[in-house]
Length: 370
Image (spheres, rainbow, N blue to C red):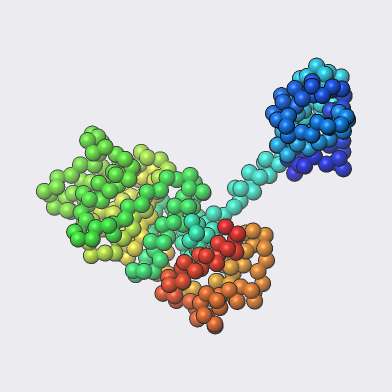
């Protein structure tokens, strides 16, 4: 820790040096109070009873707690009362600044190496296992990685839950703006390519009267509209920069084949690097893309299987470790017994994970102290 961020402690040689400097500047309380105010400290935050020699240690401790040690040094350097100490002050600032810069660089490096794809809890939602998904996300948001991704599986297998992790990783890893296009909202009617185009336009706040807006003939066949709209959307999306479109609800009876093909063509365009920095994720898309050249290269997460019990044990231990706590195997197993029965089934079926999702969230957040 750099001197600027440390508590003021006279066991530290630098603190002693600062105190020696401080003593040389003032012999009266009123000028000293004015000086302290210039540093950014309220007069009432310092105990002014006693001699100035006794007041300075308390004042410097208050200055350090406020994170203003550097400001104290620069203010003293420019104050005529410290003219004789200016060279010593400048040398001390130079050394401490160098330390602070090294500390900042170390923190930045540490932040860069954090693997956000391995997040255990996002928005109170616990993420256990999902190894393939995490690997795919790492590639998806890498500068030279994939541009499209597909998550497969039957209803209630956790695909929609995936949106939360996708959005989190997109923001943390690459600074992407994510937009969810949820086709499950069409309950009583089939969504057409025109409907999908309108949902995309609404997500980005596009004005329907804009001359560059995707246009279609609502009297035309869906296949024709899909062809017209896909070309216009590909052009528009390629100009947006770092955005990620996530399509969900693609396995319902409310979507005709032309509409699914239309959505698949958008993903294929991304996978073919036609959308610039735009990424596309398809949730509940259980078919091949129409472009056979692109389809083999779009990463897929297969149907989510039951989770081995040891993955749950490891998950609890990882969550506890995030707050610096250690959870033994026995403690983690006891928590699993409490949540899933004694003994828990091994592996844990997804149906049980869904039923216990809220309780798992509470237990995980408690372990992490959030």
